[in-house]
Every structure is written in structure tokens, then in C-alpha cells.
Image (cartoon, rainbow over all chains, first blue to last red; front, side, top):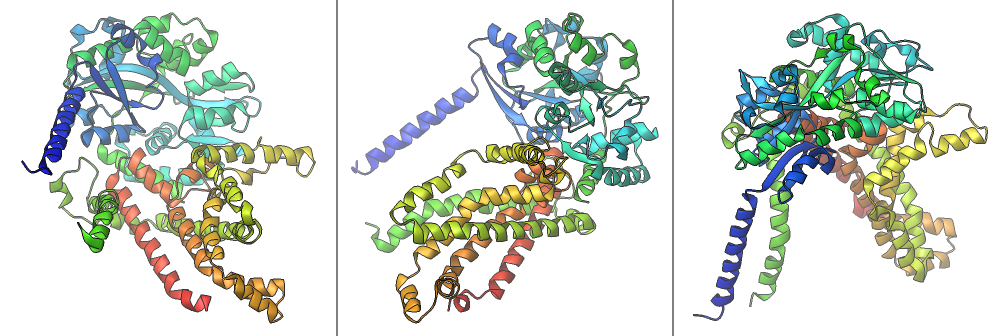
Length: 352
Length: 286
């Protein structure tokens, strides 16, 4: 054998063995990859699973939006589990990206209210597990804003440069549909054009558009720079705990909006049982409680919600007022064509 | 043995491979994606079904084209001011710092080694309504109410970008000034030229290659800037790069985002080409 070829064959052997080890590691039975939102990768939000499976290796891929999560799954993400929010359920089913959940193996499933379970069903099959949820409404500073009765407060130039709207086209169309009484699932071209012009006129009233409530919105609510905001109740609770500004959370005549976070198991997963256990443990008491106490978001485990005693959280979730949930509008599914049109509309609003 | 030419070719393979895999290939992919009619899973079959729908949308949306023009204008302003502010720093390093030049150079570049996001976020603290600048101006009685213009505005974006770019802008100018032959300055002094005359008629012309390199180095990436307008721009400081980012990550509309990016690339290349034709470096230095 020529002297030059021996080191080369040794290198090839090392590379081959490394590849085998790598491939084995990637498909290891105690490994999970979760496509998650930033912040949710913290151990607090899967602590029960970690306690029950200390040898399991859970890694996270971060998605920045529902569109981003869907895009990653469509382009072949290796995630075993993915997390998204209501309105997007049909897309994953239609693309064959999600496996049905065997709820008979979920020990915490009976703690989830039927209304939440129904949100995870598509075509009669349970594809998703509901987990986090919350309200969207108007957060306002009562020192400057006496009362809020309608979503149209976002368009009130009395509060110019002290308003903040969520940086989201579909969210803007939702608000317009509430104000004008439109069918959110059947917005016409004329209605969309009207909404576009109204939001273009509204743009100058904003201090800014926010994308991350805890990084962009809450600090300026607490500093008193923002008096009126499209907001989730997490920022409301944060402001109540802070106490530096008198903040209230409206129940507009059109009703609040509500959103629910859902987990799905990828149709390509090689670790279905482990993924199922991960989802089951998301509903466990400590994990769910951490979502409530650390992010101020609701959790689908009703026992956890019923056990809340903190007056700030009771206020933030409207637990003492059943009329709130009765008048709440839940985010409906919309088509891909609608989402494309609404996001392009928002792009034109922002560019104006 | 490879020989000298063979060795050079061998050494060039890794950077070329890097460039092809991480620049040329993604760019070609973005161009192909821009010709898709709608968003959705991308596979080779769909990439070959070309459509100009996205480009028609962009051409039919004047506000997006105006935004590109505005962003280019902001980038030009940032490039010009960053170059202007960086020139004295580079001049000091080249002509005054002498044996201490390396120390000052390190001091200039150390902030650039920190997190870009942290530095931009620090400007939010400085420029905000309750920030350090407004608080100071209110305290000394210059203003009664905070100046809103300092944050969530085009001005905030320009100020922050200039701050970010100055350390990098100084480097090409410093390199050009270091190459200035001191005998030219001595000769000018011997011929009776005063300090200002020597500066304007000898130093500045010889520094032009570095100045122009700085202008292009700052202008080109700033046109597509999106992090700074995202953090401090608010609704007024929105830039074209942020529009592209929105369509990629928030809307998941890769075809439209790619088309917007291709148009930005073409416009930027065209502007640079025009600038290079207008500014004949050989005549500028002569």
C-alpha cells in the first residue's frame, strides 16, 4: 500500500464513524426537538417533563411568528413538536405535517375544558393540545384616559403619540372587523381597502408598533409614555404588579379577543411516545402554574386556573367576571389567501 | 508540489467555496423564489414555474418604492455624516497619535466588539422620553416637555446608525491617510502652503480613496438595515429592510420578500455603479 493512501483511508474511516455516531445521536430515542416561541424554552415551562425524564435531551428551535413556524415545518424542520396559535390549525393538517394525538395516553387530559379541546380538533380528529391562552383588549392609563368602551379608542387622536398597536396585519383587520361589525372570516376587498385607509390615518397616532409585549410595550406602559394599547393581559398583570401607573384593561362593547396556544406532534417524528409525554407534562400542575405566574398567561389545565388566589391574576384573567368570557371573540381560522392579503395590506400601511 | 500558481489556486478554493455556498447560491435561490406566484413549500418543481406576480405587486405599490427611495436617502445621509465624523478620528490616528496610535485604535474598536443589540438598546435609554438626554434638558430648564423626535423617528434611526458606523468608517480613511507620503506635505510647506492649505490641497485629495471606500462601505448595507429601525424607528423610521424582514418572518411570504430584496439589490448596485462613473478616482486624486 502506498504510504500516502494509508492516512487518507484512516481519515475516511474516522469520518464514516463520526457520521454514524452523529446519525445515531440525531435519532436517539430520548431526544426531542421542539419548535417553540422565544422564552418558552426555559425549563420552567417543561419542568414536569424534565423531572419525570431526567435523561431526555430536549432542544429547541425558535420560531418568530405563526407564519415562521408554519414556514419552518413546511420546509422540513426536524422538530418533533411545534407550538402555534389559533387560526392556523387547518394549514398543518392540509399539509400532512401533524399526527393525531392519542388522548387516551394523556394523564392530564381530563383537566382541560371541552371548549379548549375543541380548538385542537380538525375534521373531527384531535390533532392539537391546547396549552397557553389569553385575552387581547385595550390597556389604558386611567390618569389620561377616563374610560374605554370600544376598540375605536385606538383611532382617537386625543391620545396621539401615546398609542401603541400590535405590529400585525391580521390583528389590525380583526380590530377593524370588531369596530365595523364585519364578518372576520369573510372580509371583502372593499372592507379591506377601508381598513387599510383607516390604519394609514391611525399610524401617526402611535408612539410605535410593538412586537414583543414584555420588551416593547410593557416598559413604556409602566413609564407612562403609552396611554392606550392593543395588549394581551400579560402586560396588564405586569403593570398591576409594578403599580407605578394606574392601568385598566377594557371590556369593549364589541368584546375582547382571545387566543389559544396549541401544540402539535410532527408527522415525521420518530419519538411519538416521548413527544406525547412531553405534551401531557405541559398540562401538569407545576408547568401550567409557571405559565400563569411567570408569563401571566392562562393555561388549559382548569384546576390550575381554579386554584389562582393572587388578586392581580384574578383581575388580569377576569376570573370573577363570567360576562367577560361570554362576550369574548375567539380567533377564527382564515385562509392562506386572506392572510396574504392582510399582511400585504399591513406592509402598505407601514410603508406609507 | 503545486508550484506558485497551483498554490495560489489551492489557497483560493476555500474562500471561493465559502462565497459560492453562502452567498451566490442563496442569492440565486432568492431570485428563483421571487418568481413564485404564492407562498408555500418550496421544491425544485415549483421553483421552475416562473411568475412575475410579486414584481407586479411591488411596481403597483408606490409606497414601497417610495420607502426604498427614502431608505436610500437615509443611508446616504448616514454614510455622509459617519464619514464626516470619522475623518477627524482617522486624521488624529494617522498624524497625531504617533506611537500611541495602536492604543487609540483599540479604544475606538472596543465598543464595536460588544453586542450590536446592546449598543442600539442603550440608545433607547438615552433618547427616550424619560431617557438621559431628555431628563438632562428638562433638569437644566432648556425644555419643559420631552423631545419626542429623539426616539421612534427617522432622526433616531440616523443618529443610532451613525454612532454604530463611526468606528468602522474611520478604518479605511485611516489606512488611506497612513499612505500619505509626508514628503508631499513638506514640499507643500516649503512652497509656502499654510496648514489649512496643505490639509485641503494635499491631505484631503490623497485620502479620497479611503473616504469613498467608507461611503460605499456604510451606504450599501445601510440601505437594507432593519434592526435599528425596528428598535428605535417607531412608525416614522420604518425602512425598506424592515419591510423585507416582515414579509419573510412575520408573514411567511418568501416570494414577495425575495422580490423586494432583489429590487433593493438592483437599485443599490445601480446607484453604486452611477457613483463610480461620476467619481473618477484617478482624477480626484491627481
